[in-house]
Amino acid sequence: MRLAIPIFGRRTLVRRVMLALLAAFCLVWVVLLAHEFIAETGSAELDRRVLRLGERLGTTLARASSDDEARAIVAATSNVVNDSYRDQGLPGVVMMQLYAADGSPLYLSPESGGALLRHAAQKLGDIQLNGQPFRLYQQRAGGRTLRMAVSIIDDGWILRRMGMDLAVNMLIALPLVLLPLWLVVRRGLRPLQQLSAQIVGKGVHDLEPLNARPDYEELKPLAAALDNLLAQLRSKIAREAGFVHDAAHELRTPMAVISAQAHALVLAPDVAQRVAAEQCLDQAIARASHLVQQLLEMALFERELEQGPPLEMLDAARLAQQAIADVAPAAMLRDIELSLDAPDALPHALDRHAFLSILHNLLHNAVRYIPDGGQVQVALQRSATANAMLILAVSDNGPGIPDAEQALVFERFYRCEGQTIPGSGLGLSIVRQAVTRLRGSVELSTSPTSGGCRFVIEIPA
Image 1 (tube, one colour):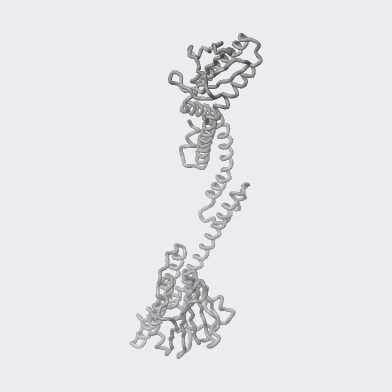
Image 2: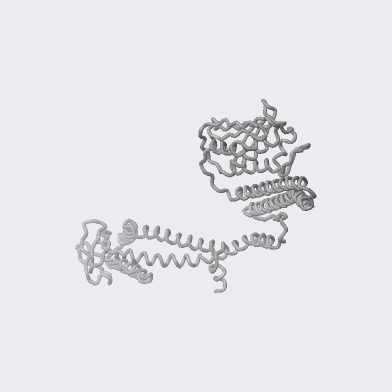
């Protein structure tokens, strides 16, 4: 009882294997029973056994030299066959009768009860005696006639008898198979338990690889997957720690400016200095607010990349128009021309926030860094290839970015050398995350016509 509880009382792999084995044994029992039952109860099988017994007995009778000898042969055979029926518990009998050449009975087996078996037209046939079905066999041997009636046993009884006999054999074989298999499975699961203990034994902040080397090939992918997961966690925690460190460093400057300007505002001796301090304070607050907004935007995209919410069918041309309208006031202050080359409608599977974030950050960067009176061009089109990608291109005629730094500007808080215009260095990093959210790609190059920056974003259908 104590052994059965751990195996079958809980949901374990051992219990699952044992139950599967029991189910397999039951299935084998059913299949073998059906096969044996069909083979045993077929009329051809019964006829084969009756013919074999009758022909052997007939061959022996043909060599008998007298009626007495023939009678003794049939009597002995009848006793042996019926004793065998009784020993096996078969619900039937075999009636044997021997007739002389003139038709007079030489021997009637006790199972006949004095009833004579009538002459049959065929060697094998069916008869009814006392309401019971029999298979009648008739043969002439040595001038005498042998008649034999074999009981046709009920199929239900045969099925029950065969089922019980087969079940006994299966039950004898079951523990001989079950016990070795149980031992093998328990031993096979031991490396999993060791791997689990190794994981439990690690410290809270220990994300180093397990470096487990299981003996079984099936467990090696699991150990490799765990090490890969730990590596991803280490990388994620390192990125988050770096992000927090950089964010704190970047926020420290505007916070210091706000603190300094607040003191200057309080201590300003006249109205002019108070107004100047207020303007500097507003600029510092705006910069800090913009930086915080960008940090929140980056955190949002990272969470969406992990969760993967579904996209929706949106009009990319309409969203581009909206983004240009949002940036237009800032562009007008510096006499910068914004243009859009796009179809009237361009439906595509997009995330509204991600797509607008791409446009806003690219347009704001262009308006901030190109000279007064410059141009910013936005182009939208669908590729002619089979995958029907959405292609967004944003170009300007500004100073551009050196080739050596084009791969670096997408990193967090990176700013080009010699840059004097204030900024956080997060805009292009947000663009890259938003493009990843849309399963697309972004490429920065130098515009061949204006020499400025040219960003090309490809978003798959």
